[in-house]
Image (tube, one colour):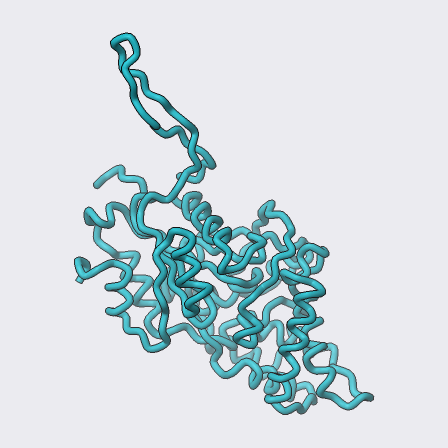
Length: 345
């Protein structure tokens, strides 16, 4: 099996929110709890009801976290937080300036989220999958998420290392990334700005409330120290593909194409084109090979795992991948069999 290109083996990607990790408590409750520390007392149900219209309006006004307008994700989330809370307060009361940064910090860390119990063992099993005819090279693992560049904070703070990720966030946002105590990405890519709208938050209240502002120490943010784990403690993934960087969201097949390109880059086979033998013919007694340039592709199995049928399973299948539905009660052995097959038992 030596020398077999990794692109002939298994590529597995996972959705992030409600698959690899989930909120420790309902997000609207966490919003209200953090707000109380700043003297803002609101009904959590009021937060839930206020968030939806505020979110939809801001997505229409400034899609894809304001990227095409040059806005940082932090400013986008600050605007959303203000629009969520302000209708819940008396006319004369203003939102404390420190509240949005505190919420942004809280939701960019492990204090707000918990890793699914089977994830550490699952990532280990995929990494240690033996070389077989069905899987002739090591498995490549990635994440595909409809979100902005705060997912790496959460993933790494939950103890999962990411070996390759380049953010296309603005310079101001990258400065915030570099200031954080997590193992944060600091490199940049040349991805183009887009007007694609994030789609997961409206249906789930929030895929994640993200961003990075002034660090404000509260009981909630202080709790992060007890929840966080060193990156790699709970496994490693090879790459991360975000709708913010790509410019399209699941279920658009473009985000799966971007993930495939990222996987090829990881395994060192990322050239955009390669020569491919099309056909052979006999010309005056000699064999002539007809070659054409073709777009490089992952030739092994490509499997995406996520909790939403339309955006994860069906979208993956429409992109030519396999799609596997994630359930909160799924067992390790069940998921291993779905990904590796019974031969790995």
